[in-house]
Length: 224
Length: 415
Ligand SMILES: Nc1ncnc2c1ncn2[C@@H]1O[C@H](COP(=O)(O)OP(=O)(O)O)[C@@H](O)[C@H]1O
Ligand SMILES: [Mg+2]
Image 1 (cartoon, chains in turn red, green):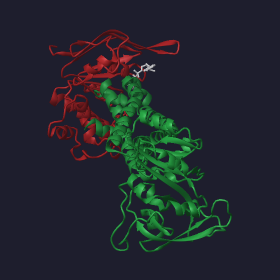
Image 2 (spheres, rainbow over the protein chains, first blue to last red):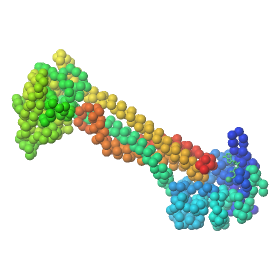
Image 3 (spheres, chains in turn purple, yellow):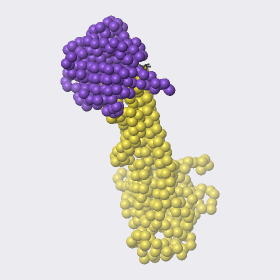
Image 4 (tube, each protein chain N blue to C red):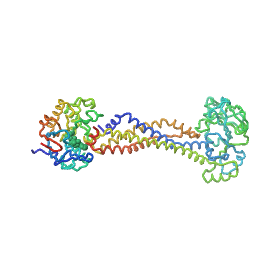
């Protein structure tokens, strides 16, 4: 493949201390994410999926290993420095949506721009809402939305900064299968139309089959 | 979306907590503004009231200068008298520009039962003066003119049944020129009160000083009806040249009269200012406590709010917020809380200045007629600024804690 590598991890380890024992949540993982591809991370609960995507999105730092995001070595960086890496390049979608309850749909979507110290251009937020199918919900508060709609807002928020990689941790895990499929379709559309790379964790084998590549984790290692 | 909007939305999310915190700030600011207004006002009030006496030096029976101060400004109780001969002697002093003998007595107001226990306000100050020298000392005294006051004049020195009434006492007693003023007096050494009737020959314009509440009558008449012929309460003196040296020289010359003391009004002023200063220290202590409580309130409220929103702050970081940006957001919340308290608090203090004045006046019990509490725009501005600065200091810790949260841990703990 000749596509640009946006994220590259080598021998990634992430160990947690829990009391006196060490939990090896990730124990030597190699991973590459290229522009425009969709990568699915499969694996049972506790296998290290969340830990992995947190590293790939610079929300967390590896205990050991090499990690390059957007051409920049990030292993060993402090939280202060990781912020700069996250900004603009990466969009993150949580399983529990994590919208800000006091903000409207449009405000939630516009929020990341505030932290980029950038005002949305006229119609910019409306276009994002249109893209995620929420054009008519701009002024609603999160509590007035269904789960599927909330996840659409979260995707809109991730897309607002026009990221090159969209990272989603079990984005359909809290949704019924029908709604989950619709959300997955939205991700697919985004990858297709905007050329955004997608890293997504799931238990759903049908979704995994529709991604360009699949990584399967077990006990912090890639098994296939 | 702006930081302020975001901060504001977080504050109104918990309206009761925010209101209580802002209320604490408002209270502290109100106390601080009142104290500041008192600090600005009382020196001037004391200085102004003393200036209105018209003289720089007074000679009075030996006693405490504090008492002297209160006596002069209120015509208060515990009056001491000095022999009239002192006046005759002192007036020969070459440094004197003007001198006036004054006799002060207290009469029961007409219309009050003599058997009952009348309130303190049921008394009138009667001041016996020599009309010419007294008016020379207070050239600003003006007689009212117009309907009801036509023909107003001062009494002759030897008049026996004429009075001139101060503005307020005339108003209160509803007396005009030509009306009768009754005074019930228990003469010195007697038990039975005696009723006297006077004709009001003049009413004074408002002066803003204690003269407004005084009824003036000829010195001789006053001495006589109070049963104190040949006695004075004070002698008011204006020196040709007034300074510390002249004052000490003058004082030295008249130490030889054993019954009297020479008091400069500068001394009286100093005594009053230090008296009031003590009260001020107590008020300041209350203010410090109020401010501390408000600061702790702000810290506690914002810390609680940050703690509640740990997960949310993690999310903000995950969508791109840096340390400084989180810090800024939380700091803004403390700033808004402080402002939300400081502005109403200072307005409250400004609006309640009269009440504060009345309370202080009552507690301090000094007869200063000018406002003790002076609240200026500068004072309001400075206090609000102070509240904002303290609010920002109070916000440092919570904002720093929020800024230091790690996103993954914050989100996990918030779930
Ligand atoms: N902050 C943490 N502290 C301690 N252990 C953790 C922490 N986060 C995850 N783990 C542990 O690491 C392992 C991998 O967790 P996770 O990455 O959440 O797996 P998955 O997302 O696949 O369910 C689990 O055993 C989990 O209990
Ligand atoms: Mg997980």
